[in-house]
Image (cartoon, rainbow, N blue to C red):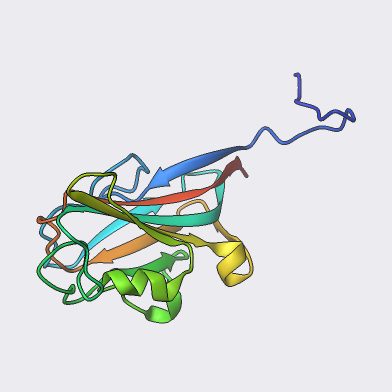
Length: 175
């Protein structure tokens, strides 16, 4: 079996960076979370069997036609009622992330991380991208093992948005 080696001849891990998205079935496939989730719904990524996922960044992308105001979510008519809430499920032990804070407005993105930006791409649609760089913002990466889940609790109506994705970036490795 051939192993990758660095320029000094030392073995290099074959583990590669991965991007996984939160979706309604936990597979990590790309998904726009644009439904009416006024009944609580979990969007999540489940770590596959015999794998470890070390998450370095959580990215939230919201796109909408119209002008993003500070006190709204996207260009919707106002703030979210319940907001986005993140959790990790460590095999039945549920841990709230961000100190349990909910993201209800565009301003909340900027308040929770300085890695947020708003773009308009020269048209009428605008997009806010907010990156939670775990090592920079919180002092370390989040390592999760098989069966554990990274969860976003949805409890609002997102049908007015044109894009709504949550992605996890990190390294997926065999245990």
